[in-house]
Image 1 (cartoon, rainbow, N blue to C red):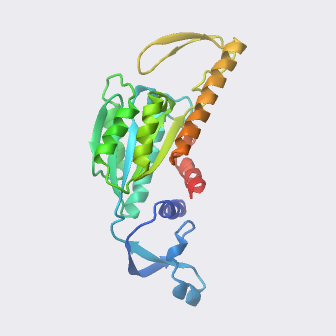
Image 2 (image 1 turned 180 degrees about the vertical axis):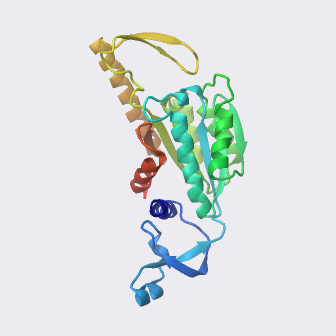
Image 3 (image 1 turned 30 degrees about the vertical axis):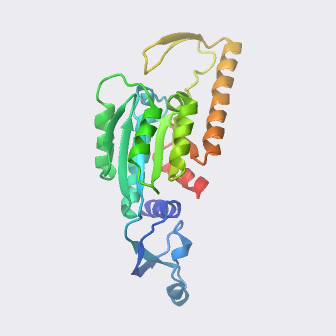
Length: 275
């Protein structure tokens, strides 16, 4: 477990390099460490790679903006989208703690539910999210308002990690993209889109009634209608492609997180993709 954590710490530091100062002592190199900090003198003497220890303020914050709407409670595999989002964010805060990064948290639904300019790490962070999603009321989604709020409070040079589902990205798409673009001009922006294999109902299971978790509206679908199911699949797939294209075009990194994998599995893939 320690080796896995060390590997993730190394990958984290490569993706979010510290702007700190060298302490003067060194430690053994861990795969994923930033090679800029290899101490070549010690490495040459010991024949074992060493890196200098870094400390100090990064000079920027990492802000998590997490969708807590009703649709995030959906999940038919190992967990709900919300549980996966909370686990991913909590794991990243543990890595941020090792790197001495500062963490902020924004939880949003159809309103900004909670904003903490400075937040704790790990389990306390996870508990803060849990308190909001268990509030009991039916929550819609308004990512646009959340981004506008961030635009007002962000400090230049921050890293913004938005974790949401397709529904959040679908609403007010043009205006939402404009807000993403505005934020990305002065900050690093990453979008993690939570997905489930059954976001589209499986075919040939008869007539089913699906409910919009945010509005409560219901719709009967005949999954045996091959033409209808093909149309639903094509529209969903086409929209996903549009989202990835448009978000990528404005310099925002985007990646899917599927409910059938763990947060740890996702993070290894995530770091390797973007480093």
